[in-house]
Length: 357
Image (cartoon, rainbow, N blue to C red; front, side, top):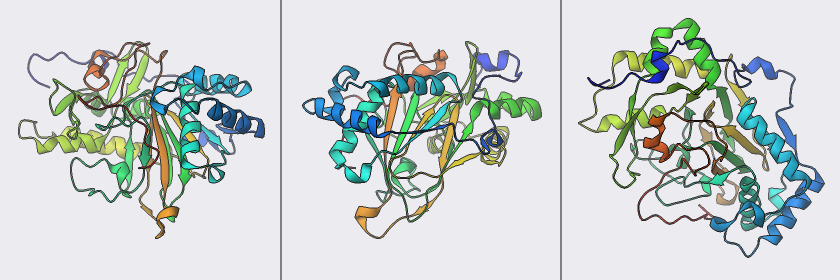
């Protein structure tokens, strides 16, 4: 922290544990699958009818009124409440993506997303619909986004309120998904290592990976944990923190910062916190980004291009999302609930929703 900087709110308050339904541990779901919603035939029929109804509307212009749902709309309200106010995640299972064209799959997924929030850009190209696929990018390049490789993605958050992943195809081996409650991680740290929790509540330098909004610097400062307006909110991607070290004007990471991140990484990957999921084609994983971290193991893909692992991603801004601390403006653009917030906004980019990667 530089001289004259204000101590973050999370540090000035007690590091007492935070209690809410998202403060769960992996064992809470032993023998329990109520976090899975299985699409019915009626649901699928509703989705295909809505897709036909909206066929003339380009995806970037699609609004919830263009994609009308009946009974499924009521279900999505309940699931959305569980994401934002409950455990922080759900898995929707059973979309027949193998029977649909890429264009129909994208439209149905995007339209369903409109009932949960407003899609925001995921990169400097203005992509509202992201493709999580190995594109042969070099993982050692500090500006590479790891989702475009087959390398392991450690536990991290994205820059949005809700992140959604639709599985189109699975890998030959590996690529397993796992999630962890950042609220539970906060609580364990508060009990076991409050000194390192305080380190994680102070700003780290974070790399924008050359996706720089107009008037901004290549890096910004943001803490990992924030206690604000009655919530514990987490934003963490160690890859982006370490990438910022390529800049000469960024201070070197302190030993206590490295120790704190090492402990957080071990904690969320432990059997106690890590909850594993095995994706099937047609699954949609929906996460409350502010309180759920997610990861992916390394994977080996199929030799045939048409069989290779492929997920579609949505970043969704929610009009009634939780209040965010002022520091988030550096990453989110605005923090005002009701405004479109989050995503990656770069001057000159045009919002688009590519059907293919």
